[in-house]
Amino acid sequence: MPYDVISLLKSEGTPLFLAPQAGVSESPFRRLCRRFGADVLVSEFVSAAGIVQNSKRSREYLRFDEAERPIGIQIFGADPAVMGDAAAFVAEVFGPDFIDINFGCPVKKVVKRNGGSGCLRDLNLVEDIIRAVDDATSLTTTVKIRSGFTEKTRDPVAIGLRCEQAGAKAICLHPRTRADMYSGQARWSEIAALVDALEIPVIGNGDIGKGEDARRMRDETGCDAIMIARGSHGDPWIFKQARAALDGLPIPADPDIDEKFAICLEHARNAIAFESDSNRAIIDFRKHLGWYTKGLPDGRRLRTELFQTTTLEEVEELLQAYREEHRVGVLAGA
Image (tube, helix red, strand yellow):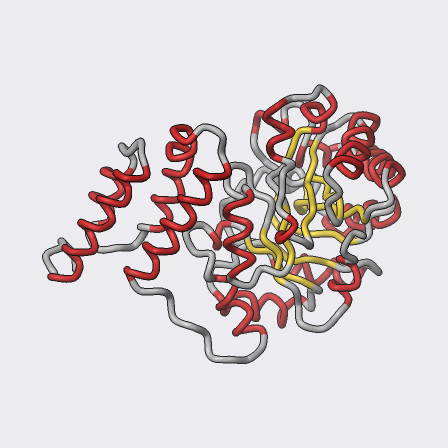
């Protein structure tokens, strides 16, 4: 039976969600974030058209481990019928706990096909998509939105009300417009306004860069849950720190070099095991190597070397050499 994620959202404790992030929220990273305290996981966004066209790559994005529950599969597209068919397939074949609809992605190649935040230009289409997905399965339908497509059309409450009316059972707001991309500051006041306007649970998202931010968002907005995206990059322990902050407990310190590298290598090994092509896996993992080493003394030099690696053994050797240099204090900027 699917996990009742809405009951979780309505319970006390402010659940923590790992955001759906293309190229980041793959299963190995999701499982790592779960270990550090993420309560709910969401897949990378998957093209509905790719699903119904039997795209091998799209189907790969849908895989998850039972240990990842509760988990949602996020789909995107602009054709209600295709979105409904994709949702039905995902529910029947993969059986996640809920289906999430992406109305937030600002990337040009998605928006130009009217997907992601592109749908926000036509709220009738938004409603049609939600109804098609909700009618296609018995699973809970949730949505992720931005505050609008442009500053001129910015109205997250109006968008949220339309989503609720169409059948969405929970809504996540990233309070930036598509035009904002990731610049400027997320307007948390818009999350608070959405909480006041809707009956369904509201998940807050945007500018959670450290554990303390999670508590501040909850206190300022009254949101039912918090979704962490870029703050988790190279920093899966942010969930442990956020949970401590939300519970009013001392916030754990960041891991030291040895622990951080151990987590990084655990992540790398799981990524290689999950991907059928080990060479591709380590190349795709380079972005994570950049995030795990951000802020380290002489980190730029280390990243330059790591970005040239093609095997796990090369990564292990570079991290071990750096660890030794760090131990004896010979790193520039240490």
